[in-house]
Length: 237
Ligand SMILES: [Zn+2]
Image (cartoon, rainbow, N blue to C red; front, side, top):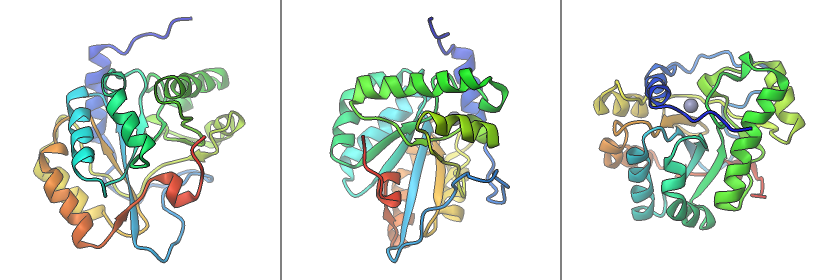
């Protein structure tokens, strides 16, 4: 069965969704959700970047990573967005060098809480198949539910096919197409801290336009950037 292609219209809606992502940390995630890193004696933070609805923006993340080998990012891949194919060779090199990790953000970005058990599995499995085919590495066990919409049923169904780590966040850059770079920098400055999982979106140039300033926030706070595999001591499969 063919997956319905992500249309230009839905990508636009997605870019807006990035803008609407909660900037507040006080989100009551359901039991079993993960929104912070395990305790460590090392001061560290996980920069997680979702979607890739803008291939051009994703390309700027790739270039920034190539120029800054100390920067690590976990990407939550929306496999229906074309940037993950367009930049696959360069992203794979970054992945194979341990600088980035690719995790699962589904195939078409539907709200998982509104889908049947079989549809939830299909959304995750299609993204997983894409990651294996293009990058040669599994996205398991990490997934992030689109829009942060998750409940006990989604957690259980995902775990049944190997996605045992439902990753939410503690602090958002609130990045999207309708937002200014100064607003992104303000949110990043507010939320970047030890032990946090912060969320960002490669859906516009709002974040890329302030990369130097954001990198300086991590540096000035003496925070080591880590992938989720490193922080949770899991091994890429
Ligand atoms: Zn998303």
